[in-house]
Image (cartoon, rainbow, N blue to C red; front, side, top):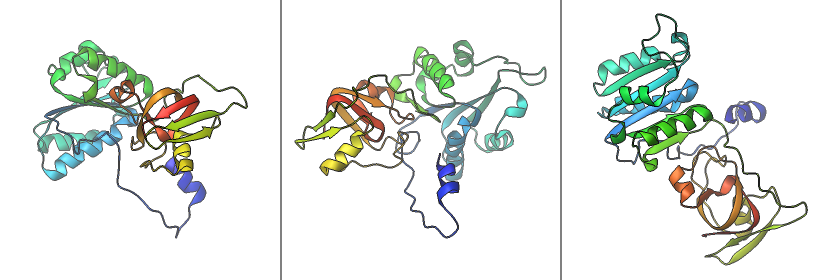
Length: 259
């Protein structure tokens, strides 16, 4: 999405303000004794950043990275990972092929729970980072939970939006957002986000990507329902605790937010 915007709207000489990277899909600021990274396709990209950072800082973290590919020719960063493995004794790299040739691997087929348990027998002791297609992440999350990793130690990075909920307000009907601590009430139509309403009321919400990806604009919904089209910026624990992302949540009826 960002690449398309740059091509369409920017040219040589334009000034761009870039903030520091934000979000929860990171090792930084988190106590992790052992890590498990699962990826498919280009989902390896953010995980490579983690591995490179560990290498550059000389940090020794027990890390197992499993890359799922169709064939050996589809493996990404293979040579670099082999080099990093030689200089990082606690890094273990595994590859699972869904459509292997006879020479590709002795572990053919899509990664399942039994195979994952064999590859990572101490999975329950690890913090997991999962990145790839939506279906892949959903399946891996189920496996990880069944192998004993608690939900608050499973972090995901999505490349596409989660399906929005189907609740809608009637044509012409106005939703109302109540900011409980501030005492403001703002009317909203079908396309207005919680962030839009907060700006209308003069209430500041910290934001960054405004795409539902980084998690910076997380707020707690205390009443009502919203349509949230996020891109993985909330953990499962956050969702269960009632948090939403203000930038991509649209009120359905009367809702209240803890702000």
